[in-house]
Image (cartoon, rainbow, N blue to C red):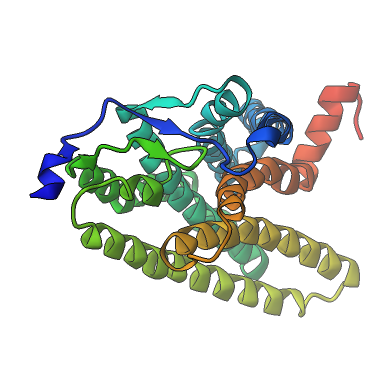
Length: 314
């Protein structure tokens, strides 16, 4: 009865506080956020342009890179413009439907990112362990189908979050102590039993993400076993460096994402500032690092960048 009297179907808008506890520093904190966002946008846009215009790069590895670049652009752009508007211009209000979009977009795109990293690990495994069969196994058709599966799985797993939240009544409070509409922060404003929603969140975190981590780990273990059998030390060292870079990017997303997700449920003693900063890091750092690690460290793309900037062959 009390919940029904103090709740409505949904509010017209919410109020995002930004980074509570660092109000006096928010203006300056926005500058590194903006710099990372600019690097992510410019780097991934350049990567997409290079892959689109260079026909020699229309191969499975680079098509996966293009898909990852699109994911990075949408992932960072779904939240960062609003975060910067809050920190610089105090534009704290966000519409209900825009907030629901922020609830679903990062989760969906993070799921897509997880599968992209798994697909790229598969590509590297096939290229190193079965080099003569690489082009016949990962054909353009197979890559296109895998890309469609990636998007479909992200939508299927994340859609229930948005659907369940949209059907719940909200309390009178519209204040979200975050810099964007994070799912669990929005769920705390609901005047209803949210155990199903929380339980589904835990299921997705531990089953889907856990499965991805296991598959990626097995892939890289098999890659490393194949690398250790290479006769040339230089080729072995180069492949080790590539795998280490890929693993660093994967950890840069998985660790902050899991920390953010689990802190909402179990980390009641974690300072709110730490939680909010981690929530922003996992949406900014991987999109910024991906074009550097996957793009610049890839010789064909690096050579193409040098030719475009200097007008001569490297």
